[in-house]
Amino acid sequence: MALIFCDGFDHCATKDMLKKWDYFDVDYFYIDNINKRTGNGALRSSATYAKVMGKYLQNNFQTLVFGVANNLTTIPDKDQYIGYSFLVNKDINIDVRIYYNYFVKIYRGTTLLGTSTVPITIGNEWFYLEIKIYLHDTEGYVIIRKNGEIFYKLNSIKTRNSIEYCNHLRIRVQDYNAIIDDLYIDDSNFLGDIKVETLCPSGAGTTTQWDALSGNNYENVDEVSQDGDTSYVSTATANEIDTYAFGNLTTTSGTVYGVQVNMTARKDDAGSRSIAPVVRLSSTDRIGNSVSVSDSYVNHIQMYNTNPDDSEAWTIADVNGAEFGVKLIE
Image 1 (cartoon, one colour):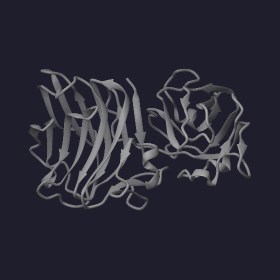
Image 2: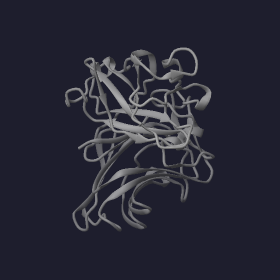
Image 3: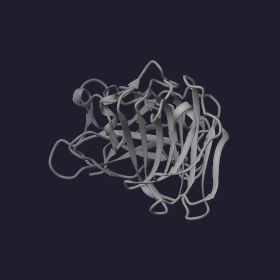
């Protein structure tokens, strides 16, 4: 029972989305910093052509929950839709589409399973969509919620189209404008109408061992959108750590479902290199899972569903009091 991934579309420029998503149509999606729901930005599609973006998951899931805020800004016509697909590799198990006049259709592969009796939106408004699927030959289900309430569901049906799990989520927008924000993927639970907050370094942490290109270390990694080789910290010494202070969450009450640490890194020479995230709480560095670094900048993600200091649920005070950083493993 865990949060797998989230994105508030606040810290990547359009050209950098492929550092975080596995595929992304940079010509037809773009980060919109004006028509956002929360934070610094949202993701918007153009009104022409089919646009797709996708995320490959690290494991196979028979149950999966997907949530995202939607604002459908033009009335779809004929075959225009926004679709959320649950795939195993490249084969679609369940496909949920918001179609003409904003009615929702659910497909197993290309087989229509059901259509909602009422539209899910009137258009040009933000609403929070959640989809929960269970893949099975006879007892599968699809539950769709709007703003935390059940909108439409299908029970005791065949939801497995190929293999009885999914490991890939795809978003497709067919020929019309749509804006999405505050997205999450969970392996079991509805999280409700959530907000994804993005925090950037705001000061030096306890340990400053990496080398800054210029100035203070944290000033080289504090940009909202990663700027490549314009500013960075670096090291060639194994076990060196850099940690940073961060600003507080704007949210002052509520539940923290997880903390996702993002490290954008590359190596600049031959040979293998690996890094790991560092979470510092209660004067102790907690080292996360190591990842290999390639020759090009990639956004490496580690999700912490609980506070690594005590394995308890995160609190807002925990997040506000933590330092985050990076360690060179080898």
